[in-house]
Length: 261
Image 1 (tube, rainbow, N blue to C red):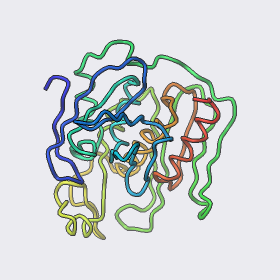
Image 2: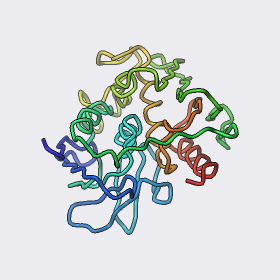
Image 3: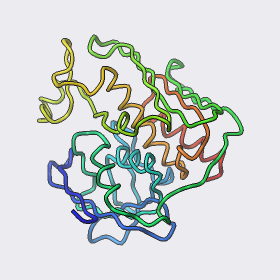
């Protein structure tokens, strides 16, 4: 495998290769093969939050960045370049666990890791301007904690919640997979690949009863990396109530403002 990973891409349906190398303290950067254009994992390059987190710069786009960035957050990896054969990150099983295994096997130099520690000086609340029941609260804490509260009007999902702290096993959050309505999966040819649900429940065995809430927590963690600072280096407690990629990006923007990252 070396420093390259090959997995199928959700959008292209092609085998997508990702090659990771250390860089000189330039943060996490993406680029396409045969392009000299580096796209930094930063809010300045945020292009879309519709269904996934898309970064763009100088007409190049990279889709599905959130799971990879979540894996980097969990391992506190910060200074790497990622060269891709397609304008998307490999999807794998829709989790971040395969990224963890790959990244842990790279033996990256210490310069690639963020060992800083920060304290939150003020509490933060981000509220969806169109729906006040959707919000993200960030509070001071002795340790890093992050969680999601789900309240969906669907029998397979309903109400569930999950909280992860940096004292818990990484696998708990990393193995949580993307999920989608099975009717949509069938229409898009994703049935059997993307975790599907219908009115009767999930069609594949879940890793945990609250795997959907765990995955939304994983998404939140990855999106917060766009603040320019690894959220795990901050002593804070984050809870998202029915949030998604757009609200996540607004929380990342507030963190960036607070820490001037």
